[in-house]
Length: 325
Image (cartoon, rainbow, N blue to C red; front, side):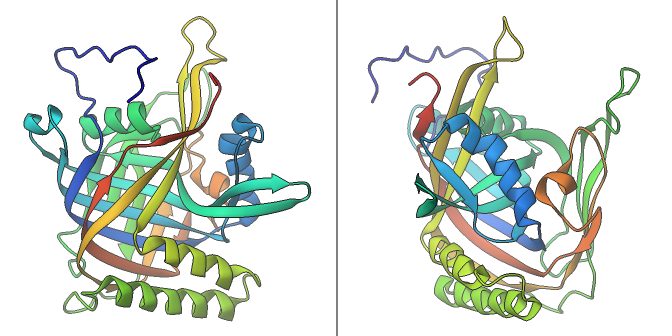
């Protein structure tokens, strides 16, 4: 525990829950999308590499991202005193970019670990929004989120949130549909297929490798996928840009840091394949998702889709770099 920092002042109405956090009965729907690696690299350079100024370096692991829709039935602090505050549910929709983290040695990048960066995250629970933003640096936004009843149910994954379609002084911010994910083919009659994490990861790896090799995306895609899948076995490490705008100078940050934190899978219940889905992302200046990620367009089909039911822990983070030293 750090003794050189001021104690956090607990106030009435406080919604920022102390980590580590236990997330139980999570159903996660994943839609893999092709992306432009150069666009991903530009985004990562802006958000992570430029602020860190050499203290850390991140590069895209491959020409793909995942749109992940997570239905979390129960989230709760794992330790007192916040554990006694009870639990709540939430739904998250986010774009995940797999990255290699490492260091630059002259002209050579030396990868050391695999992490995931989430540049766009939408949640339907205000406590999850403020906890994610203030503790870790998740760029969480509040929204109205709708999911189908299950992996075999009809219906779409939908995100309505506050958007600004065009940046002009006369523009009006409105709550509107930003993301819509609907089946592109009939769902299976029953869900299932995986009851073992190793079997599921292996099946997913084989499908991804066949997909990228057949499409000849790039020669290194197989190696990148191996690293992504190996890292997914015990869990996932996430990377964040945590920052707060300065009150006196709005062009500056009063706090800015690169944070990494582990999300550790504690048990896998079930999982399996889903049909391909059609993904639509609305065009809005406030959310340049298609441009930032280098997606094929405002409407595309998933390369593949899966679902998993599991429990995991969002653990304490590590400050990789901080502007405050």
